[in-house]
Amino acid sequence: MAKRLYEELGLVNTTEMFKKAVKGGYAIPAYNFNNMEQLQAIIMACAESSSPVIIQVSSGARKYANQTMLKYMAQGAVQMARKDFKSNIPICLHLDHGDTFELCKSCIDSGFSSVMIDGSHHPYAKNVELTKQVVEYAHKHGVTVEGELGVLAGIEDEVSAEKSTYTKPEEVQDFVSKTGVDSLAISIGTSHGAFKFKVKPGEQPPPLRFDVLEEIEKKLPGFPIVLHGASSIPQDYVAMINKFGGKMEGAVGVSEEQLRKAAKSAVCKINIDSDGRLVVTAVIRKVFAEKPGEFDPRKYLGPAREELKKLLIHKNEHVLGSAGKG
Ligand code: G3H
Ligand code: 13P
Ligand code: ZN
Image 1 (cartoon, protein in one colour):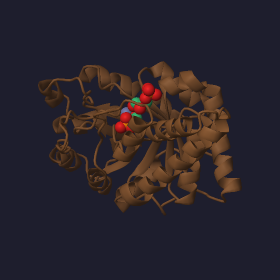
Image 2: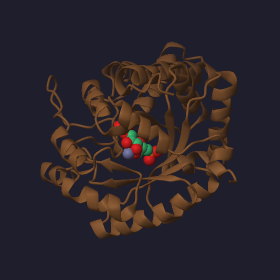
Image 3: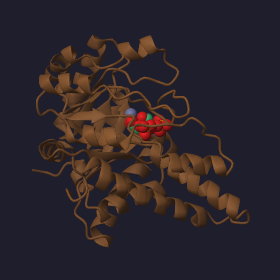
């Protein structure tokens, strides 16, 4: 059979990765990238810790970096892993939060190996219809699809709104069978960004709704579940940003302990973007504060890349459990 476009780029879809992750009780890291240094850090970290990886692109990243550029960056990333790091880790290029059929189609046609169609803001029937349309096209091209049920809460949401946005376990079987999705993103209390919970100093953020996750697992045994909004917002980096002129008081994320628990469950893909942004910003602020005369981008992007790599290795080894599974 002729090679798929993404196979020619050296990429894989999520089928095998998820099968192994569900069986092995760990989660595949899904790290967002927008530029070369972030992608290098991701590939270096995953090659060094021998972890399978999903490199993901949001529509904002696609606008920022250009879709053609991203495609060849992904191909370059595969080649770097194989040739320079002698690593055979599986690498998937995924569209994060696709919101239209046309966007998903465009990514599939340009060589992405996986797409998310996020119809979670639509009424249920419309979400089913849109997701099904994407699945039909994607599967013809061997591309896997992530759907979403339940809306991730934003920090500004009222408590009542947050409650009604958790995934309803009674809908998941129907959604998966009607749409044919390969994985399902759920909402159990995480949210996007660096300010996930409103907590007073010294207070603990509310725990994730593992009871909802358990209900979903019961309805869909062995089915790959995805957790968005899973940055931990390490407080050392928040402090570093604040120390060197930034302003991120009150930034808080999901504890590593809860992510470890999620990774051992049916959750087999964990999405992390904000932590990467945080590290890079912290290091760059430090360099600028300590060396005000520095104007060579390599002198601040280089240390930022190195620190990001260290953080991602830590996640693979000590949080997601994906290290050594590549
Ligand atoms: O889920 C959202 C990701 O963090 C992407 O964020 O749309 O600003 O690139 P972005
Ligand atoms: P964070 O903002 O917690 O990193 O979540 C990223 C995400 O879910 C991307 O889809
Ligand atoms: Zn997300």
